[in-house]
Image (tube, rainbow, N blue to C red; front, side, top):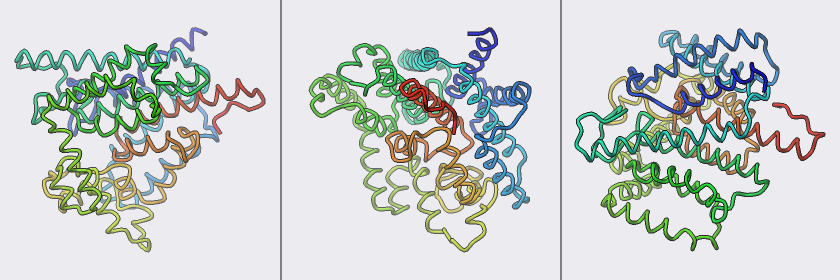
Length: 408
């Protein structure tokens, strides 16, 4: 590796680590990660200095920013230059990152090392927090918010639910690259023995941080790798999970079950009653579908920046004034319109998905769909899924040298 690539590899470390973590000293208003903002601002400058040209393969990224800008100007009364610049920095960071990896800067071993480092860091931080709580310390390391339970801890993200999603993104990416190196499907009964430390650290954080989201998404990840005949080998893990649930007095699980039953009814009132905080991710979708009008220009070009911030607090009980909610669907579509939504879909498909109908796509939509666009969780998912696709493409070219290894 050349000296330049070694330096650029450090940039990749900085981007992935800053996009995967949040430190209490750097959290500003509305949970904005000021450290990440600083990194993205510097990376945006690096892009123009090191790669001062446009690429045809990145056209969807340029179109996405253009549609967001058009929507903002169209509703100039709610236009906020800071929001547009934040979106621009996100996209420029994506472009810089992908140009680095598609120039061969990142190797699979380094990528796995970054992922393992992050999982270890999450475990160490959570463990320190748990010791602090059990010891009755008044200060808890990196605690960003306080919750209704002392056992709900955030580790290295702003909140437990984000920690669970970040850990799942990291672990799934780790397993995806392992499959490419093994040249076969990951066998949990066989291969997990070689990865037992990383599995232990991952499961410890997922099962003890006190997040209901972790219990909701973890079975989906395990389903991808567990075969029916292998279940017997994982009975000890099942026993451990049951014991943890008993120690938690089933509070988290009962909340998840009640919420799932309410969601099936599609009744916003029932969903709010079942789990008030979790409902903020589901109820906006129901409300958006109820107000959907295909003949309205706002449906196609959006209602304007932060429209959800003004609308939802007036119709969702308990949502503070000035606070939006919902995720990519429906908030992004509501704010920026269906056209921007279509462009965003093609951009994500271009950079991230191997094929539309796949577990990759389903898993991403299930976890990231409820997240807003301008969040580091959304950004991290694009970087990780895009890197996974890059290494898949490279492995396919090794198998068939006639395939051109390009982002097409």
